[in-house]
Image (tube, helix red, strand yellow):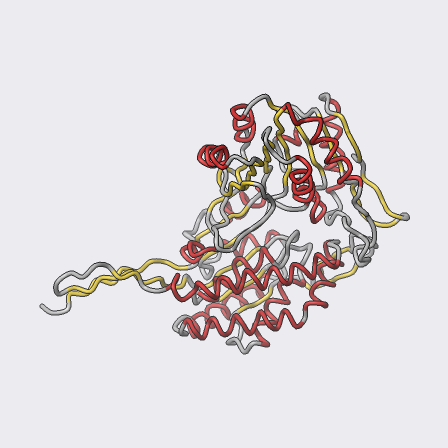
Length: 461
């Protein structure tokens, strides 16, 4: 039997081992999910909500152990990992609150002798492929709404954070869910791709890289399986001339550095009006230098290690590319360790960025903050849209009309004014261009977990 081994990004020792399923076991899991769906699909929504609430409470009761698992698998500081448990519960409860109204039949205006309505019916078996960087949040975006909609769920979590899938399955079992309604599965990438193309799967939700999204889409190409993709970002921020630089710098630096920059919606490139350029760079420098690297279980640590072994080298290459093309490293810029331990990358501020540099065009997924000066709103808009990715963008200004103009023309799934790197579950989470397709969260998220059925009754002949 093959075994997946996950190293601890701080100790670098193997900390988690799980057996990998073969095709025979995956087939059993799929059959069990289909059987669970058949028995669950007609469950009243009120009972689905109660089940999800019980599962969330079970996870909250295990918050310390869940957070500890997150920290040792991907290096997130323990306090932030505990915060993710709370964030997961908040998203879940919002979806519970809106489930009944969102899933109710749409009744058309009366028509003599006819009843016409649109029912939302569950899809069936939903395979959720969450990402490791926010292992609870990327999973809950699908698991809870899918169950609320009447589906069965298989969570095949990232190989960097496999235990998080087990936490969801265990919580639903403890909540009294029907057997195999929510299952955790561990398998390698080729097996995952074979499962995606299996006829017993009705929908696949993938969160990850653009490359991974293409692989999942190709795996499903010979079937009509619904594929929902939440992929990468190279998210821009524009700081206008009227912005409060001290407040903006605090928000933007946090938006770039939180979770060691390992976020699809992290601020990855900043455009600042030339009149405020030098001021912003200096304000950011002090904040970037204040981060404390170290043991993620130590409360003093504010920036943890890099989760994936190959990422420090990639980050160093991006910085080197920028410097070679004329950028200046204001602070940071190198892979590092703390007392000889850990897979760290220094929080890094760069200035003098130009459009051709890789950092301004590709997702970096690390604690890097590159800044470029622009002469006008029009130049900022053009530079922000000059990307193959389109997840989030932020505009920092005291002028709401300016923000509205940017929101109209920015080619992004979410446009912020005076905030960044945030998600409100009442709003749809969606990408454009190579940042993916489909929707999770909000009332619209249920549309991708159900299919419409037209009810067209003539009441009497």
